[in-house]
Image (cartoon, rainbow, N blue to C red; front, side, top):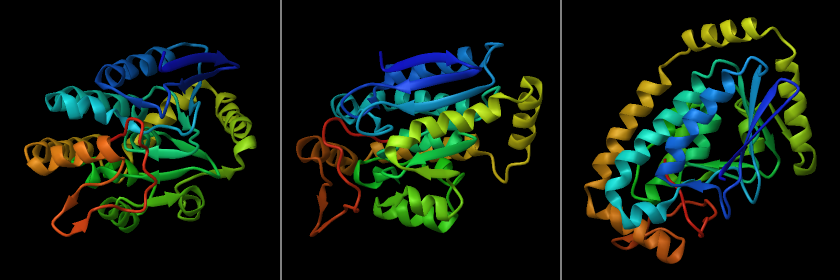
Length: 268
């Protein structure tokens, strides 16, 4: 199963475990919102912790699925939107505990969460511009400044966990071997509070946000669909699946400095 669920000491854990890179197809993204809702509604759960097994946190969408079936962008868009919305509107607080690569859909999950506890090897990136897609900036903008998001989005480059912490978007950065225990310890502090207080606090905090992340992301998704109407979009996916890199348009490559995840790929 790509999503494992555990409940211990009032913390509900969702563990991404879909080798090789935790990239999910449309069916999986459509499954995730129900898992989040069901876990959050349990009376014995006061906080959700989302972490991952394997090389990295999440490589987003399975590019191979979309390369072979571009029309599935509709299902992918719906699954992404509902998954991030489920995290953002979750009845109880959500802590994301990323390590390694955090790409596309991983950005959406982290950006929709209430706090991020990162491993020191984590990095955040939106290489959509090299994958023939758009999307993800709205959620990255929940934890990183506007200018940093634009620079990362337009280059496809990385933002390290240390840089994200320096900019105030990550609560803590810890060595990889200490990361899991520290994330659970942080979640346990939240889980020690009144469930009613946490539920009300989450509603209050969402209500005073500077912008509506769900509406902003839905706007972005319209441009993902538009991008899919261009031949360059398919060329970008073909190049990524064939070589793990970016397609070349004219005389220049569109690549950023993000490390390629060659096994299956991502976008949001």
